[in-house]
Image 1 (tube, rainbow, N blue to C red):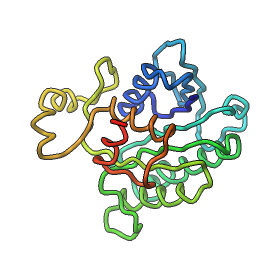
Image 2 (cartoon, rainbow, N blue to C red; image 1 turned 180 degrees about the vertical axis):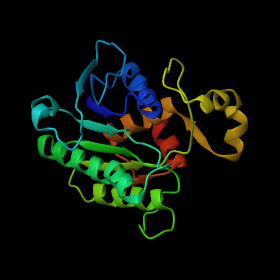
Image 3 (cartoon, one colour; image 1 turned 45 degrees about the vertical axis):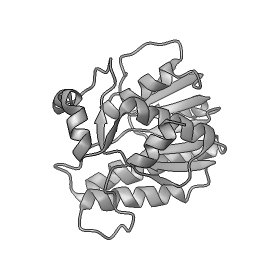
Length: 216
C-alpha cells in the first residue's frame, strides 16, 4: 500500500508516520508538508508545498497512491471562526478534492476530534467547523472516507514532536486512561492502515471503534 500523509511535522502525524514506516503493509509514504519532517527512511519521500489548496505544481507526484492519512491540523485557540474554517475546512476539502481527481480509488482518513459536532449547529466553534469538514469529506466519492475522533493519545517511542504536557501523559497514561479513554498513536496509525486495507463499519470512528480497527 502506498500512502500520502500530511501533518508529519506535528505530534499526531509523526506518530502515524512512525507506524507507517514500521508496518509491512505500507510500501511507501509520501509526506506532504510545509516544511521537512526531519526524518530519513527508505520508504519515505517528501513534497513541500506552502499551501495545501494550491497543488498544481506537484500533482504529478501525488498520483498512484492508495490512501491519504490527513493528520494536519491546528488548535482553534486564538482564531476566529473564519480563520479556523480556512485551516480546518477549506484546506482539507481542497486537498482531498485534488487527491480524488488524481487517485479516484483512494481511501481518505481524516483526523477530526472527540466531541466534533456532526449537526454543525452547536455552540462550540471548533466542533461545528470540524463537523462541517467531516460531513463534506464523506460526500466525496472516494473508495472510503473515515473521520477519526481521537481523544487522549499516548506518544509513540522515538517521537520528537511531543508537546510538553504529553511527556507527563506518557508517564501517567494508565491512570488517565481510566478516566479519559484514549489510545496510543501507534494504534491510531495501525487503525488508519487497517481502514485503508479492509474498510471500516462507518464514516465516523470514536476511540472504541478505532481500537477495534487497530486490533484487526
